Length: 413
Image 1 (cartoon, rainbow, N blue to C red):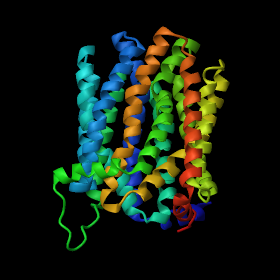
Image 2: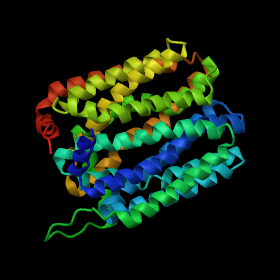
Image 3: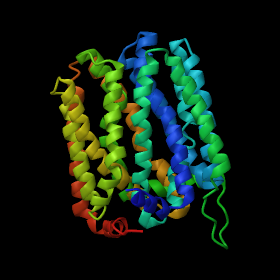
Image 4: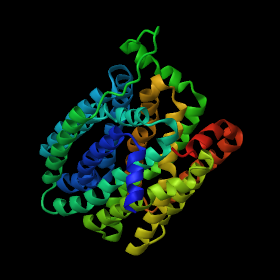
């Protein structure tokens, strides 16, 4: 076992592992706080899920612009610089959020935070793709997810305990952890921005931003983005609506919800690398179809079951789908993107999460406050099924274009 872990470590560049460690630390801080944000807002300010959904919508709308600007800046100024800037801004905004006592200010702050804290997001994925050769990317993204979910395994359980003492502790710890991560990145990681080929002139900032026109004219990319967004609208309910749904409808406390998220993360930690190794020789679009069908079944279950053990089982099903979808989807976009536009492609693909967080919690809030809350999960199951059908049709239509990706993904280092 030790020798296998040693071989795995030696297979990847040193800077890859430093980036993984840095992001693990940063995500640990986020996982302490974010899953409990809806609970915090409803409890402190005595508002409903429509108000919470509105805040998420404002945040996500502005994060769309921040993410796009971050992608252009990542390709223009470099990965390392944007990552550090994003971490420092994230630390500051977390502390401010925890100190606000007027709900109206949350609307303003959610817009500001959405705009500035996502500046560094495209830099992380672009740097990872820069560091790794093409044949290692799907495994690399899988390992990245293991580190992310290891933090989520620990974070929500600790966060649920700390939230019972004081929500302010969550905001303070998230701030401190982001600063620690920024220090690690500054001292231990190099700039990985690709060198401009001889004879080419570096684009201006406006030209870099204008390059999004090329991204959005990529028809295949846009279809992939649309299908991803359909399922992402459902997936974000896990980190927003599910906590309130379980509390208000089934009497599950914050700690019980935290354990459900920890189950999700723990499974990824234990099984992501194994599953990635088993599936990576298959066609990417076929894998996306299967994974999204797991989403449809798992999220749909929450509308039909009423016992804690079945809530856990539904999360097991969702997590299997997630372990299939996440590394394969990211590797498809990383390979599809031209090297000099990798930051912008990654940022553009992040639109599916931005719009999902903008629409998903708000629409779910309208349902949970006015109608049968179970409809959130019935609709979720339907949408994921629709997305799966889309991936299947895309495989039939353009599957041959993805053969090189399948070969690349299936090649061992």
